[in-house]
Length: 240
Image 1 (cartoon, rainbow, N blue to C red):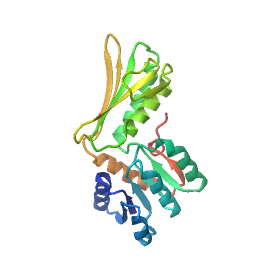
Image 2: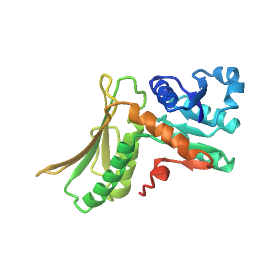
Image 3: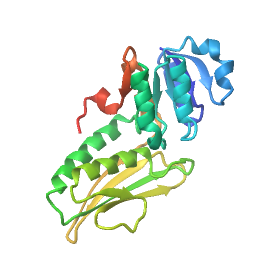
Image 4: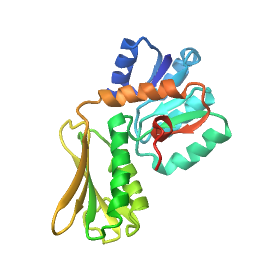
């Protein structure tokens, strides 16, 4: 593949390194707004763009790719309030966007386990549930996109829950989603069910960022030749 890297922070650099090792070619790197114009000719060669930027930059980066008919794979989180509009534009204009809160295959197994556990716990109202997520101090969005997916899934499966909040002091109908920012932690997510008698807990811990980068490259290969809006569930065949 000929890849345009959009965003050149830690994840962008790692994707570029792994892509090159796998025999792919990086034809352009975009890290600042004026890079689009500077790299115009190179961008015309790109088969796909892989985007890891910031919540403030991601939406415009996606539209810049759409304007050039470049399929986009993005792992940036923190832009959920724009996602419906971007998705509609993508579909209506026959563009390609693969968006994931987490490209790790292990995390997507974790999503499925959490949904299955929640369906069982829905029959056991004596348990209270909460989500804890821990990341490095440089992560800008709170809670993480992964934690948001977990929380939305729990609200869907647990009929006595109507929403979630990042406030620890929630009412009985609201799931607490607590964020921790510590050192250089790659990512840890814990779903905990607590009753007066016991605790049930499932956890995913990322040991490195490499799994995220490999997943993004898999998504880029998978999305080639497709039109529309896609997620990890489409690629893995997972069903809610």
